[in-house]
Amino acid sequence: MIKRTVDHTSVDEIIDRYDGEKSFLIQVLLDLQAEQHWLQKDALSRISERLEVPLMRIQHIATFYKAFSLVPKGRHQVHVCTGTACHVRGAGRVLHTVEELIDIRPGETDLDLKFSLETVNCLGCCALGPVIEIDGKAHGKVTSGKTAEVLKGYE
Image (cartoon, rainbow, N blue to C red; front, top):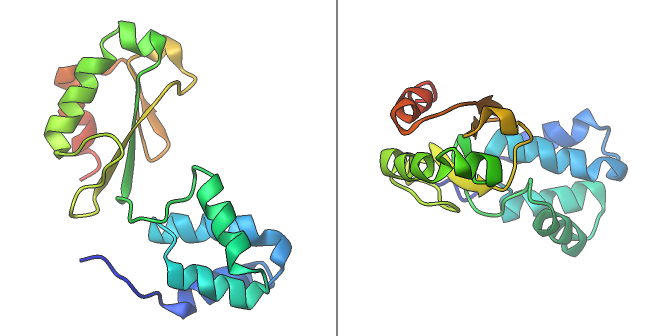
């Protein structure tokens, strides 16, 4: 079940780490995103109130940067590289296998909020292609057969 209200204590603790300084707004949002896996409207309102930053400005920042999500994301962020080097080495087959194993498509999150899946154009490690990145950790030279093994480590 998706939690729709925010524990203000958690938001306040993050803000307090930065002494309530509005200049740390993006870092506060990043910390909240890392902790909650998305930015809930209640949390943004609390940040606006505590940092004395207009809610509209916070929403603009939260929608501008890809690091932020206004919808629930899974605990594990799965990125499959579909750039040229990975593509020619079978990234399409790997992506299809990931989709089948976790039963979601790119841009989706599973109902258990365990996985979110995205495709990316390059992860910067072309020699290791095809590459799957999960929670910031790159797994290189992945084959369709090795995909289940890689994902099993994140259950």
